[in-house]
Amino acid sequence: SPSLMPSTFPTDSPTLPPGKSATKKFVTKERNANQKAKGIMYQMKAEAGDVILERISFKTKDDKDTEVLVYFQLGSYETFAGKGMNANAWRSPVFNGVPYMASSGFREAVLDDVLTIPKGGMASIYLSGQKEFLFEEGDQEFAVADTAGGDFEIFTGAAMKKPFEQRLSNANFVGGMTYYTYTV
Image (cartoon, rainbow, N blue to C red):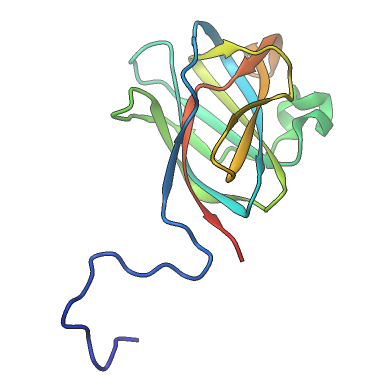
């Protein structure tokens, strides 16, 4: 409800609810993204609080528009049917369309709904494309590949020649997230 006595000095940034952070942008560390795959899956673990994802960005082979599907599911894909290689083991895509070209040079998918990873919880993400994503070959699957200042960790995942087919190698995700955190 509107204030009975509005401030004579209004701010252009409304106050956030208790525990909610401002929107943050995260980008993976500099990587030699010289590997190509049409499917990449990786895991994230929320640390200090809930992590709420709004957008996911990623590097593609070229600047051409192409359809991308983004899957998201709580838990480790290691425990999914086929260890994540079975498309039916994933829920419906949280993005299905042509991501736009962001100023960062990454393609960015605005998720259909925000996605919450509860504090201490693990989630798996699968990127599926008609054209290829770029990634860096990772040393050890499930090893920590990136950290976002205590908000979350990203783990080395796996790359597939085609979505859900023909595993190529371990993969370090190259891209970013637009998110906020919620700590109570």
